[in-house]
Length: 394
Image 1 (cartoon, rainbow, N blue to C red):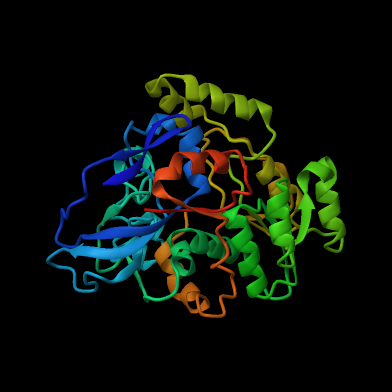
Image 2 (cartoon, rainbow, N blue to C red):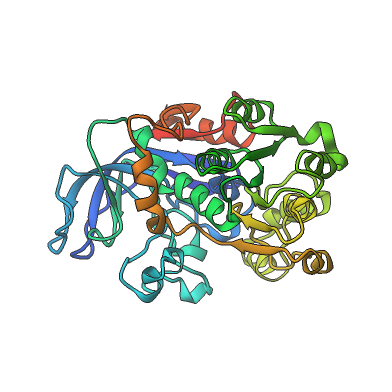
């Protein structure tokens, strides 16, 4: 089969690799029909190379049609249409029972000290082959895949793999309430969808911050009050306070993470780490890695006293400084973590109706053949050609 594979920094290719086969009686094999490129995939493209092996298959936002089922699979049959969550979670352990599927005790990568295995995401998370491919082996066929109806286009459901539950959890963790105010930092796919969900759940004011004109225009068109970081700079927090009664928003969602703009020292550190031999780079990132934390510092500055910050953007540093005095003095609540995909599916599925209140069917800006994946990664990373959300279609 064809699959998108990692070969080095900013070097992904479409290679021919062996077809997946059933290994356990509860496995299923899915023929992929759509697979998203995630902002987290750009971390692999840029800075997390020390944790990858050449030839690793990327991708963790797939959906498709079941081709083959293991002998003990009773919940699915060949021909069923499914979405595959990015967490590899069993659905039956203690953590899954708590709704913490990203901490699944059956698939925790204990040798790395990490949580649940993820599809297509480094040896830190289990080196499980990903879904930017023609076929994918999916374990836990009775409890992991999300069965969806035939008929509506893939765009209606594919975001159940990551974008929708990640944005939903971000809003849930932020404590967005009807009549409240929320600021969303970063209007990429997760931030954009978080704005839509916050509006759907009754927030009185949703503020969006970015510096990419196309992202700002897209959010503004849906009623978000947008601020261009490149225009407001150091005065941005003051402007946001001005439109929230002088206090700041009740909650802030950081949908940026380690790829924040600015922070030249952290940017240089990330770049230098990428040039080191893997063994040294991995050790450095595990012990002294730092993130570009402009978005998180802005969130701490702008959230009202007693407010909540929800981190949806991925951070990977182990030596990040935080302004603890400010955080303590403002009595800030902070929640974070990988999305527990299966936890939120029942809440989200009723919104994927013909009315499409979250705008899933026009959410993707690009739909391209799997063979064009290298170009798609490039324009997504460089923010070219209005590339906000890209779906690969084998």
